[in-house]
Image (cartoon, rainbow, N blue to C red; front, top):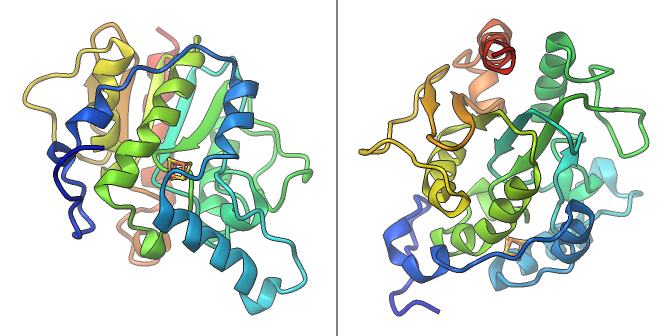
Length: 253
Ligand code: SF4
């Protein structure tokens, strides 16, 4: 463990955890990765929270059995397009066990992926609902639902191991979409561990902004389809569609 204390602030202070970011990752398959990931209990606070939420439940879902564990990535293992969000929603993926499934953000995301030709249907309600992704993989920076959707820096650093390993297994990847500023920063921070070179200074987040990662995929940044963004109009469906039009341009090259 690093010597310095984690920040109590919600904003990651990556510099607090240099040792974690340097840890090597081994080469295993996506299936093995998922199998190992769902057993992870490394972050005490997040393990307690995900399990508490799963036990107490939201009234609307009281008859359901919550997943209550880390959530693996979902989609086409041969994907050229990879989307990275923040973390599972407490009553969304933490309930259903599938990324962006069973919540409002997921409704937005999969509608957009359907319009863009990456999904076979516009809805995502539960595993087994028939949803299939084509040429697309969806994952997140942190795999356990955090209180207030705000993982601490140490938790993000802990979980970067899973993200780096997963991205390393997606051999066909050509474009990454960062859903939100958190994912944007996290991906730039993780780039060197995958052998990718990010520009210096690291580019600031901007909706629709494209960053070339030398030896790696292109990084396209988007506002996260959270209710905070979609209800306020910061992110419209047209703006979201624009991100996937940009992605297609890079995939066609
Ligand atoms: S957040 Fe990531 S590292 Fe922490 S317990 Fe969950 S899966 Fe493990």
